[in-house]
Amino acid sequence: MDRRWLPLNALRAFEAAGQHLSFTAAANSLTVAQSAVSRHVIVLENFLGVALFERRPQQLVLTEAGRHILPVVSKSFDRIDQAIGEVIKEKGRPKRVLKVALPTSFAHRLAIPILRDFRDENPGITLEIVSKPTTAADTDGDIDIAIVYSEPRVADAIHDLLWMVRATPLCSPKLLENVDRSDPAKFIAANDLLHIKIDGRSRHYFWEMFARSIGRPDLPVDRGLVFDTEQMGVQYAMLGDGVALSDPLLFADEIKAGRLIQPFDLWLDEGYGYYLTTHPEDLSNEAVALFRSWLIARFSNAAPAAPHEAEPPPSNVEVLKTRAAAK
Image (cartoon, rainbow, N blue to C red; front, side, top):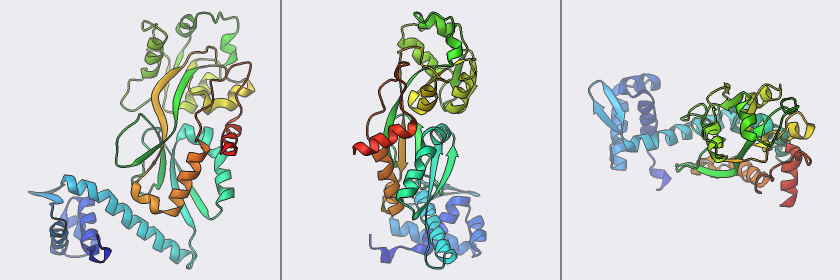
């Protein structure tokens, strides 16, 4: 499409009407007449050849085409507004700001230790980090790029797999004093289980999967504490009062220091992974493309092999630097 023919005023009117689902409210927000907003939307619909709204009594409802276009239009105007504001504020020499959404545990356990490396390599880009619940982070609104903890899915956004999660029981060494580790099921049945809340799943989903994976679906796993972040669950486990089911890659420093231990060589492939999420149109943004390629390079190899007690894994920073050096 030739950009010279883009109806910018009509797009602005459509975005306001789509946000408010009312021509009157949209007109008030734009300080124009209601008839002007309605006329602009009709111009845009004629230009596209499809209806963007269903006109119902006292209500506007977005059509499928309208729902598809609205977030893109809104984000485009947000970017224009942000860019113009930065040019004005920085007097013609704006800084490149990249807003990144990260799951809480990922941010604290892996991202924070390595973000300094990105800043050292790319001093012209300012990072704004937003921590969100593990599965809720997305690139909607003013988020430029996100990492989400998710099952594989089909969506309009681009999902680059960083690594698939492999979980194993983790606990404090205190919990293993005078314990026979030859019977994992008996050990699990005798201790509190620590659960992580996942949207759309039961509170005990992963422990139920684990019990089935070791051939003991009869194990009572409907007990213990429930946390909304993996970091909180594992921190509680380090106090010696429960067993967490987590990926050791996130807690390699604690395992290496002996504050956390993997009592059994038993693993659960959760079916979930950490995905780097961007919208295709954002790849033309140099800062987005640069951060995406940099982060993929840091996680380009598979997660390290299962750690053993006798050979503690390297720290998070060491793991990622080793991967980058191998490139």
